Image (cartoon, one colour):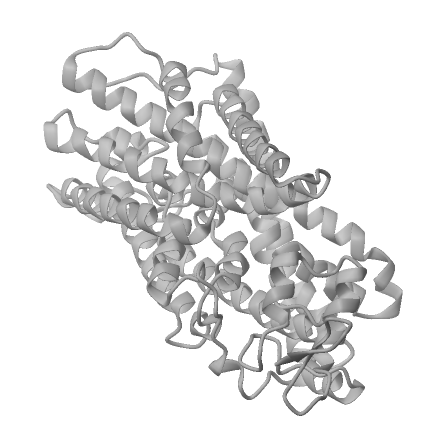
Length: 497
């Protein structure tokens, strides 16, 4: 590639690449980030060099992906491999939600809860694929290398029907708000979970330390901040791997205790718990599929983005594992402990060294998962702050100050509501239902309008209605339960050894 006197890149035949002109124009309009610009201006093996600036190519992109899309490879030192992405995906979805599954089953009944997890899993995974498909189509229309969740929603409306284009900025702000609430909520739950499990394990093992759950939360602030100062997602892969191994050992031990002396199904727990607490089940279950906000950031960092999709792709492989684990933990946990099951199954384990070690293992695993969950918030909130300062040194200062403030906010919220189950149900009902169920079908309908098929309209409408019902009933039930919690004292659960 050569360069003319205006520093515009040209190929060896002397022609100016059409993508270059588009990129320079978008940069002037503030539509392309600096790190995206370098990717867009690469030789034809780059992710977007398949795009052209002609109207015909834009029309083609509305109906089909590039035939060479599966061959795209990102030439980026910070790009993640398929294995690293799978680890991130598993860690992003297998968090505190899986340990709350037995309590979720208590709110639905054994068999209703068991049937509901695969059903919601299939719907959520389908919505993840919808989001990926729409993001790729919109990238071609906007001529950008990648889009985040909120940008995908914004550009879907911006390039969609004329009567909806005026709402593109509003949609972006709504999605951004839900993403921040969801990811920050996950991090709040992580603070509560780690503090309560460490407190119980240490109290039972050494006979008492005199430190409260709030004290353990405060102790966690410094180490959490250190992990959150890691700048690149790729560098989090080893941390996610360690967390995944710790969590695997912890879950194996949990299964050992749950399957030990298991009672007969028909004698201990109801198959259907009634409609009153079903919304709480919905909130907890949909919270467990907490990876919707990570799907696009993970794909945007992959060396081979096409590997995420497909029947045997990273997404389906990882989420199948997740659904099986959710169903197993919820079923056997509720069957074993019945109505005495707590917000985290680890809090029901007996006072034995092996059982108490699970609490420490899972606490470490969740602690190491914190930076991955809050990464999405960093990506949303901090770039606009960095742009307001000029020197690199000041940008670094703004970056780390911003990360510190966001971590402290999650600590403050966790200290205010020290109940894992109620926190999980509220976050799942309010934000996870919107991001995982309501928004993706809307984006799909708007993106492909007016070519949207009747089947897509019916399917999208059914998923949206399901999500809206869960949103309204789950939010009402969760808020009602939180109010009742504070009326009764609002304290952390007692330690039982």
